[in-house]
Length: 282
Image (cartoon, rainbow, N blue to C red):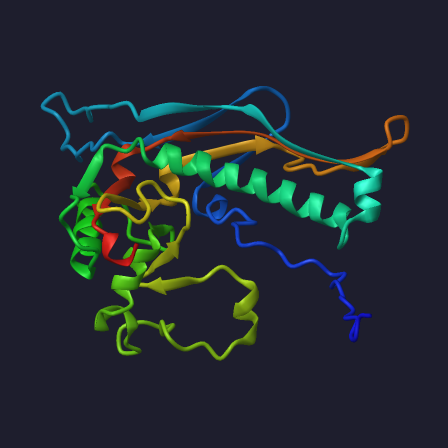
């Protein structure tokens, strides 16, 4: 005879697993919506470092041409398709259709960031090494690199960094003290921050950590300091689509997330690739 029969209760509402669900980077680069076609062409124009001239001996002003470069982002289609039988949807714990929609959107959003990160990593302006610790000095080294290249230090600068890089910065008084920043690293009275990606605004730049940068948790972690006009990202006008449906003949539910997109490095001088040793916090 069994003395006690215990009952089990399964929570109907599912809990999202730990993974990146949204794109963190698309707003930090130059974007373009493509109406039709497989290429988006970004035009970068400047004076070519021209200098002002005086009037010539002939009395005429010497004319010049502008420096213009076309940069092409080739679009490809990217998809994620998840499928579950109707029995599994019926018999499983939680809202399985909502789970399908959530996970398939997360897969494609991560691909957006992966594409932008891959493009940033083609930059050839590099600083740091596998023996360099993340620091304010390393950030300043990158800042000088950009400034020497005439990259404007405006509100379009992003430090896309490893979690370990941010951990080192948060220990520096120049970063965490209210005397230096308008948003303190360890205080935020706005309760809405819980629904937002963690980011800081420091020295007129956005400090954004990312969980999927190259070399994570090693002695050769890669971070990026870049201007928004350095990278172009194009996607179809309708953007991401995420239909969900039912196949009645085969009795299964499905959800597909799709986007047509491509990215291109437009101005190499506007991207600094930073290598640092973050292995201490691995």
